[in-house]
Image (cartoon, rainbow, N blue to C red; front, top):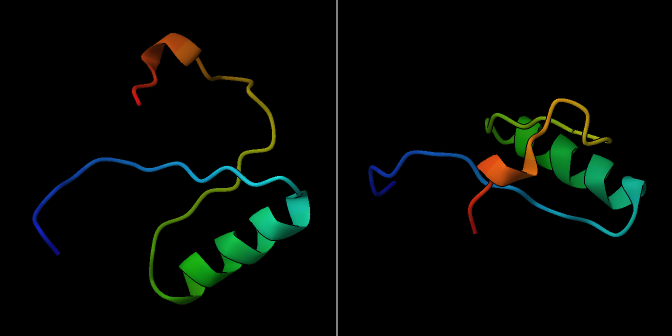
Length: 48
């Protein structure tokens, strides 16, 4: 770990892939959250 903090986003083409990735992240001790809609998101707050 490099000491960096923040969040990351993974985009997938299918919900099936998103479920697989979320499951693998959680299984390996990472915090993960599957978000299926943009409710509660303000796209202006995102940075590339």
